[in-house]
Length: 90
Image 1: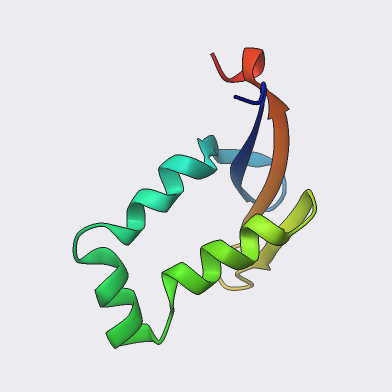
Image 2: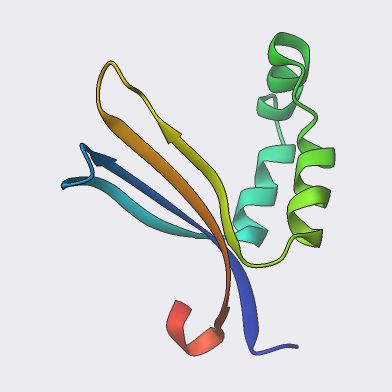
């Protein structure tokens, strides 16, 4: 087993100053979205194919994959794909 793990890091701030959310989620855990009704709901209601999305993410290089600013609220959402050593995830 590799000692390196892929993770999604989700960072949400307001007006780029006030940190609201900063979480790191192992990519393997993110794949659990495929189970249950979540994936089906995303596909039927929003046209999002979770399996296809996760395949695309697995093939991506590390870096920022989402960067959205809500001009009305000032919320800034960033999602990064990173490879980390297993020791960092413990």
